[in-house]
Length: 380
Image (cartoon, rainbow, N blue to C red; front, side, top):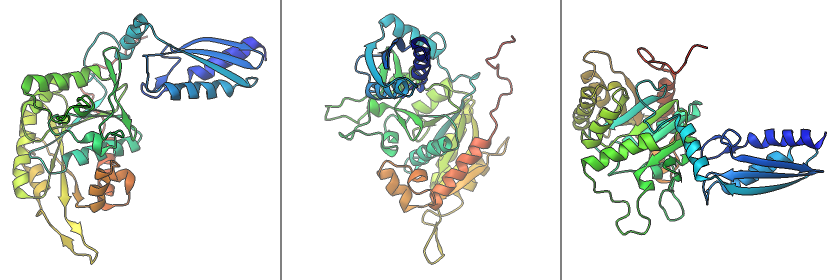
C-alpha cells in the first residue's frame, strides 16, 4: 500500500474511535486533525473538547490502538490539542441539534417515565435505579435524572462515587454537561454539583424557584444523546418538583411505587392523582417490599398485603392502571444497594431481581405512543 492509501486507512480507523463521554465517533465530532504516514510510522493529531478532559488518556490509547491496527503501521505518535472556543461552540450546537432547548418535549421519540411515590421509605429510588439498569440490559439507551434534589441517592445506588465518597462532577463542554455513565445508564444528580470541601456538602436547602431551575437545567443542559427511555427518580409526595416536572413534561408516563401497607397505599394514590392533574398519564403501579418467602416455604407479609392492587384500582378511573409487579422483600436487594451495585447485576437470580427484570421487560415491550406527534422526518 502507498503512504496515501495507508493515511486514508488510518483516518478511517481513528475516526471510528468513540469518545467515552459523548458516546459518538471522534471523526463525527471533528476531533481528528492531521494524519501523516511516513514509512511505517503514523503521526496522528487530535483535538480534545476541553483542557483536562477526563477521558483524554482513554481516547489517546484507543486512537493509538486503532492506528496501529492498520496494516503497514508499526509505530504511532499521537499529538493532542484542544478545540478552540469557536469549534466547541459549533460542536455543542450540533449536539443540541440547534438552539438551546429542552429535547424531551411532546414530539420527542424518547419515552419519559417519572417514578413517584406518596411517601418516603418505600424503596422508590432503589426500584428506579434497578429498572434503569434492567432496561439498559434489554438493549435500550437509558438516561436517569435524580430529581429527588433534597434526598438524592441515585449516585450511591449506582456506585457513582469517587475515593472521597462523593459523586463525580460531570464534564462540561461550554454550557453543556456530559452525564457520568454507570452500567450503561447516563445519570445526572444534584449530588454531582455540591461543594467538595464544605461541612454541609450533601445538604440542599432550596425552595420552589431553585428546584424548578435545577430540573429545567437537567432537562436542557445535560447531553444525554439519543435515548429510548429517560427515567426520573421523583421526590416523594406532591411538592414543588412534582408540579415543575408536570409543567415541563406534561406528556410523561408515571409509575407509582408503594408498599403493601394500607397507609402507604393511600398516600401513593395522591401522587398519581396530582400527576394526572398536570396532564401526565399514570401507566402502572409497582409494589415493593411484598411478601418474603422463608426457607421453610412459608411467607412473611411484613408490611401486609394488597397495597399495590388497591393503588392500581383507585387510579383506574377512566383507563385501567395495571399492577406491573410485586417485588418481594430481599436482603440482596438491600446489600447490593449499599454496595452501589444494582441487584439485577449483583444477584440476577434473586426473586426481587427477577421481578425487577420482568417489570423492565414489560416496559420495554410497550410501544411508544406516537399518536398525535409530529415525527422528525421530511420528504426527500
